[in-house]
Length: 474
Image (cartoon, rainbow, N blue to C red):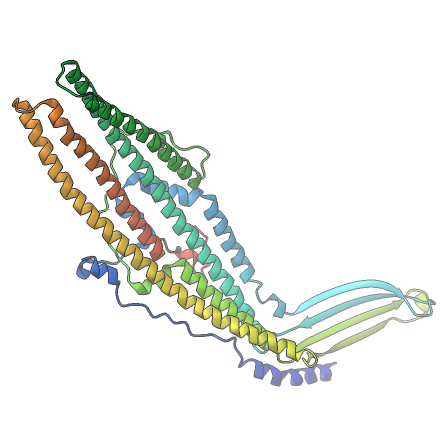
């Protein structure tokens, strides 16, 4: 048996030496990105004031403790995020057996059988050993495929986390905007009701017009219809937020009006990342990179199939004649030798598969580059939208200041007896409408920041989710 084992090792040694030099193809990835954001410069942002961003907690820059608490609850209780985390845990487990097919396998079995003449019955016990070392890059390709699936699970977890945080912030802003709009609308309804009353008094005194009464009544009816729409939007956002937090019902405060509504401040928000950081944070790019690795692994496996497959097999068979019982001796048949599978008749099929996998790998490389370009374009678009919202906010601030000054002047004239209460109502109404639009613009600016950080791939994976980490998941 020993000479046979030595001969087998001598036969496999050249093949192992040749196969050890073969690794799966690793195509280069084009990671070229612009040196800076063009829209950040065109929007008038001084590059010297831009500091580095903490994407892991960008929502805290809104300086709203209630929002921070909601995000923490969503990260701990959201079921979609929990599923993505479970898929990552499953891939970590599967990574440990990615190359299990290339480890020695041992099997044992027992059975009874009869000879061809049906004269004797035998008891067979066997112990079989086989080992496929995964030569010509097969082992390395399987390892790469396992790592690629883990990277894809990490990208999916990050995408779920980014989307979850963005949705929580958006739903929270929608609730706060609805509460603020209802607050301004209540004051507007009170003003419209008072104006309608004054117009009716003017008609009774034969100094007014019935058309003005109808106009005041129409504006009051419009205000009430707007309140119903705002209540619907607020309820829809509240129930959506409850679902994000894993709740069956929303908090009562999310559905109620507010006596002192305010929106999160956006003054502390700054662009704090460079274009190259997209390659490390954006989930779509990480998923595309995982796609390249999986395609490279498939190409490596199909390429290794073009070469002969070498394996080492051994068997120990114990046979006992049950019919003759003690009148015959037992037989022990050991066997050890190489198994060689040479692709001859199906080599054309294997070659076609290898060529097709190589084409798919090239496509995956192009998809990765396209994902980088899409990420840059999405961020630039978000920057342009943010700049537009900032300009809109500045214009509304100027208009609000002018309308407030005018309303104060007419109120002062009314106090001096130089103007009537009805004369001062229109500027007050215009000021309320302007403040309402200003609140909508402030919320739109905050939502533009949400879109920007979502495009940047905010909320990167925690350290425990990185490749090779052995600590517990968050």
